[in-house]
Length: 60
Image (cartoon, rainbow, N blue to C red; front, side, top):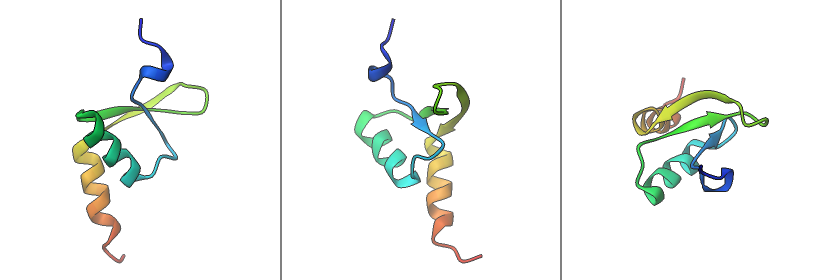
């Protein structure tokens, strides 16, 4: 079984830029999103992160 420290996950508080960098470094296309208790709260893909990153520079 995989150990926690070997899993590639992000928290809801992980910045988009950091998550994108982790995707590139680990050559993966998405992450499970966890809370502070290591409970699964969602899944985020490279497409989701790229869309959020591109929207960050657009004034509302």
